[in-house]
Length: 50
Length: 322
Image 1 (cartoon, rainbow over the protein chains, first blue to last red):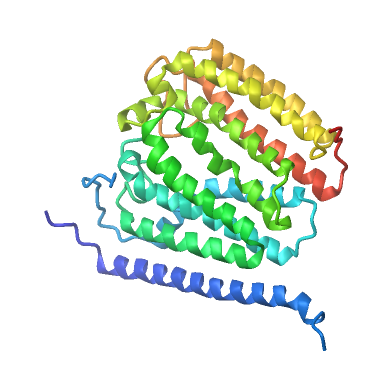
Image 2 (cartoon, rainbow over the protein chains, first blue to last red):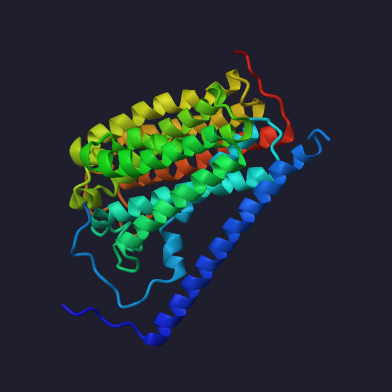
């Protein structure tokens, strides 16, 4: 059974939207890990023995 | 695998919004709300940035378990009016994509929550995802009418995770919040299933009205309501709730019991075709009593948690005689 073929323009627009959403998700992940690291380390930096 | 090979495929390519729908955003908003309540009720000083990231992780974890559920239940979702427009049964998103998304987001949410707060909270989140995806979705839902009673634990755990994220512990009061949601689930869900049981029957899901009948379900709704409402008062005695909470829980509880009694005395779930369209609230005949309890149960739980949240955020003292 042949599957219906999507419109190339709509297909490209949907793919672009998915790519942007994925990129934003990855950037968000990197930012979150960075922020968590800075905040969790931040309080301890001043307490370390000099 | 449970998925039907006959699921439809649409010609429209999947959009990013379809993937968002896999996460059940409305359920996610309830998870966020109860997790925040648990975190605030812990009365612990949490770094606001870490607290916000922890709530984000709990929400993403809930979304991951929803994606697993959408993947596994696509065959029965396709047979029910309430769920047939979901991304997988409607053919917008492939089941394998939903499975992959659930897996990736599970790992992401648990690991980041562990890094951000503590591994007890992360462990509880991992257990919640496992319980919803495997114990409830893959096992209980298709095998026993007690599916939503036991499976309700997954929906009841977010305040405990929020509490654990704030303090690293899960004391009695955290589990009391869990118990309130746990006992709320049966009357809430069975009230809905009384007027959607035709769908569940068609899909072969052994919901209580399908297996035990409408009369037995109405009786069990009343019994669970009689256990649930007094449980809502208990936080006043453990120091979790104050006088405002007592008033809300007491007055709302009375309304809840009146509505549950009306359902018990009604003929809700007995006649076919009392639901008018795909919505959850447009019903007629005896099902109106069930619809009223279903709608009020959402309002009551929201008010209970909102009051606790407000009391602890404003620093109002609990009564606490225990």
